Length: 112
Image 1 (tube, helix red, strand yellow):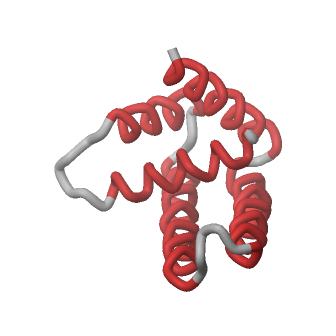
Image 2 (cartoon, rainbow, N blue to C red):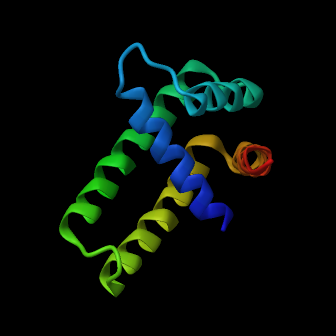
């Protein structure tokens, strides 16, 4: 569930970043999470590039598959798994764990 939440949050952040000049609550929260992680500029850039790449792949899957189909679900799960691997590679094991923790906190706060 955390993996899916991570995927959705990051995907939404990538979408929001594409809207020039408009910051959403999600943009602000992602900026806060990145700040809390104390990421250097190189890692921030890699993270944003990864988010954009994943968002493009997600759009293609949605465009070419019925959302209720097994193929759609299988492809989305594979994309989520790949995203986690790539996030761990970019952030490192400790920062990835912290990132997941911050996302979980954000999710819990948004439910309130």
